Length: 88
Image 1 (cartoon, rainbow, N blue to C red):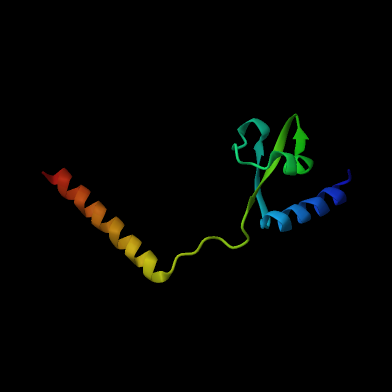
Image 2 (spheres, rainbow, N blue to C red):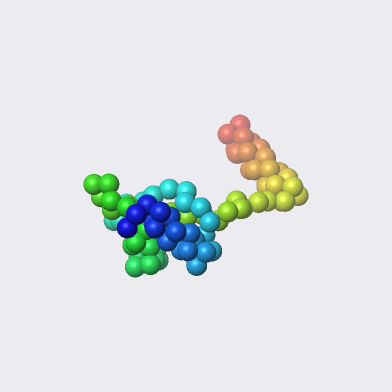
């Protein structure tokens, strides 16, 4: 299989599984149980050991400004609480 063929196959797999970009590679013996091994085998590479691609969605998860502000407030409250405990 040529590199071009592998790239075309990866593109098809990305479409099929709703994944859009490779963010890394993982060793075969470290794959999670739910990894689609059979489907992804043809996209694996061997460089002394077999490695499989790890995909991520195109858009990173986002948080609204309001949710972020609430999260920061909760972290600040927790920090203040811990500081009060230490001052006893």
